[in-house]
Length: 405
Length: 163
Image (cartoon, rainbow over the protein chains, first blue to last red):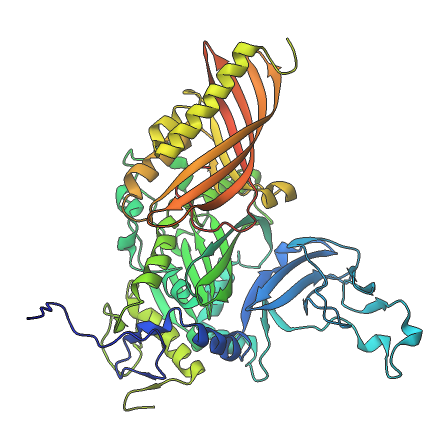
């Protein structure tokens, strides 16, 4: 009897994420994908911990009384615009017995009523009625039972929340590298107009989604080649706390006859030097401005094998009718779970997730210059840009590296 | 003519639905495109949430014949080998049919799409409603416009083929 093995040897596959990672900074243990116990710890350390999480943009709730519901991990949130015009984020839970207050994904209300005991909350969260309160506990005070507000902050209308006790202020947490690109991505002033959603569930854990959405080697996209669509010059920069920004000059596609309707990929914006921008905010948010599309992707980490993504698309309030119509057809067809550009990304999420249920490590190559330090300078297409996120993850989770810290 | 059109036209409309289903369930994108009028036609897939709330954004927004042909090119030339294959079975039920012009009908149908990923079991991809503008041309019917309003608030996977 003899056994043959022509490939590399990589040890046993356990399906359990290790607490000690390889010494090399470019190696990620594959077992971090799809470990149920690990997901519970991620909820605790990351989603309910000292990070900011993007949950929406105020343009989704433009009028008084508009609301949307969203989840942070398993925690239900209610985002509402009050009569004072302020957008607040509450836990979507009645302060009496914890019943879910609002069940719709979005809508407009005059107030929020919990149907269980008819407790009534104002758009600003105050408890305005609670029938039978004469018989309530002696220490009951109506003013103490408004909806619980989640700590939130805004950047040009982008709404972020944190449940952590020691989360740094938003600007500090995002990092100064993010500010300029994110401002430009949000139309310069955040005065956006919601065009609609594409919502989809991907069978991949949030890290597999996060590691592969937004930006990756352009060789994935056959569409770019067939359209003779070359990327322009640009940069990629790591920011604090696993955040990452990209900018690239936009080079219009040279019409080679592949498309019968090349008007779809026309650029009608004014600044091709900043025609393509991506901001990735840790852990799950990807925001893209490409051609004339403004796309914010609100993701929910549902489980160790499911990530739900709400692709929200926007116009700018000042758009003329022609630009508005162009944004609608371009946004509908190029990005998202069926987009001409990004459908292939979605396929990669799942294949990454499946393929990594094998022994060994996922190893980053392009742009790696050191095995111990994050690169100070990134080239536009280096895959090492993701390593900042992985290092941030490793530290948040308290995993050590072999022979080191 | 009656509100539901004449029987010959109804038969042509039902045959169009059958041809549409047969094309997609065989994965024959050229045959799918051939169910639309050759000169000018449009095709949209849009979530019921966007439709209900008046948002224009769609999942597929083919507002001219060129876009329909370009969708065929993408599925058959660009995306080949990148996506996880799946097969579909469409079930259609005509709900309403109203003549709105010379040889033109507004037709509403319910649909269900079952999907089977390669090596997997069958599940519902989504259900929804087709809202069509159908034209009788000679002895056949073609889509001037097909608007598939799908029910799933969250789709269970990324989408390759039209609904």
